[in-house]
Image (cartoon, rainbow, N blue to C red; front, top):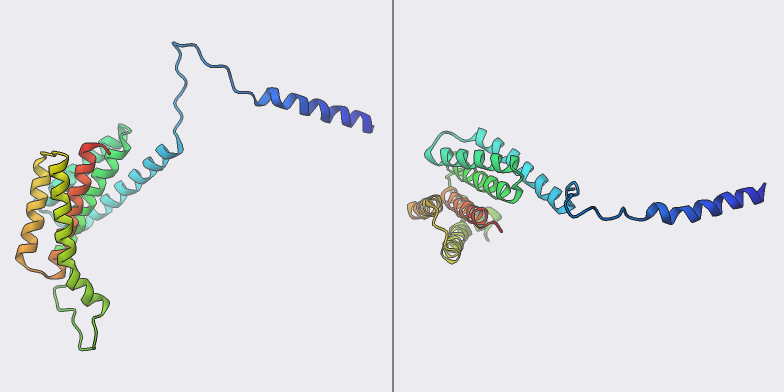
Length: 196
């Protein structure tokens, strides 16, 4: 009995290498079915999540001309997603999300003073103080990228002008954060345009 089991185990071990060998390469005219790589699946998943997030944010914002531009970007991102251009879909959806967030800041952000009577700045006070500087940095970076990559898209120029206009109106938290989000939207739109 032990001998029969040993022979069966030995024959099974000898058969394993032949089973584990890869299939021979196909003929030159035939194509293998394309399998998604893990990175492509991650990119698809990220694009799908960002599209869902942008759709949710779109439902929270009132109708403005910038919202219509963001809606058009979102529809274009959905078409690109269906066409399996996941990177462009992801970046256009991020652009739309950033525009929606900027509009949301302008609609619902508090405009009261965040300064308290306690000694030392609180986290909210530091955020109010640094917000215009962060927005200026984001605008400068987006302008530099647009000129470096020679991007001539009217929406890029419009978003940058809107961001600069918001900073020129005043340095409160809502306008500064909205300007920062518009500059980030410009960055994502440039990335979608250049493809990397």
